[in-house]
Image 1: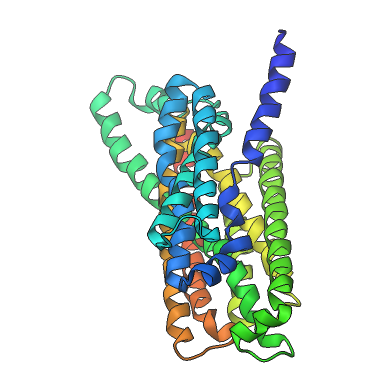
Image 2: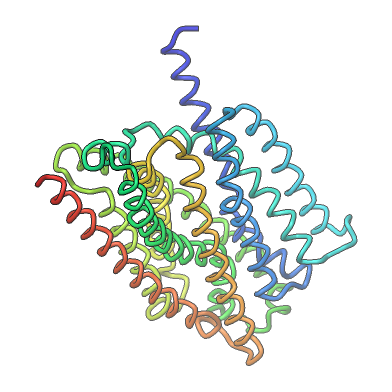
Length: 383
């Protein structure tokens, strides 16, 4: 087989694997139905949704290491088995074939599917790690024979970059996941509040609202997927072009991602009170979240090197998973608190978006700080 055909097949395989590795983002399409059937409250359903993200993000360092050292063929094979097992067990629980309806077990099933997605996605993500080993060049230029000073430099510079960049991933990805995992519930609240039918949840569903709600949930999940894809592709292409042609730093695209997400969360917290313009928020969230996960791996590779890229990016995704868990649990806790007072519409969730707006503003401040430090470092190198 000639090299050109191998490259084409590899590219096709990468696209195919990537296209089926994002099943955790489908959660909002069935989360409310799962909660209604099995009687889960908002904290419990958010714990289940977060489990899939944890499966992806917490296992990424492990599978990144495996792919770095042993290749991707076996991990893709194993992942197909685990993703089937996770969703099959969840389906059996939903239908009542499995008698236990513990939300912990349901969370475990989605955790398994998330691990499978991480294993499969380790292959295409590892392909990003092809650029120059930045830190080795810094060593060559500034430290040469002074190994002690270079190690001190690594402990301070790399460590602080890891923590700051990790904080950005925690806040941006976490707030994005909060909307992605809960848009189904948001649609339900807005639909039932703005419909002409009475606001009693059970009666509304019995009168046929559940079918319309499901259709809206599917639409917004699809819109999230499409806009996230556009965000990933456009950020990747334009960051390459602007870096090569105009020397614009890729971290500015993280700043852009923050603007997308902040705009969406501000709309949710202060302006959107019906379904009419919710699609604008969904598009902004998809673009922002997609941009984070398009630029994040490239920045990780540029800043920390390609030798252990899979592991390094895996560490960053742990921060993303932590952020998703924190913001999802707060959304669930806040929602359950307001449900006790029989809330309706935006009253059930808007306080969660006040918190997320604050988190995104902090992340934008950290990005600005990181940009300043990179500019200062580069100016020092030119001296």
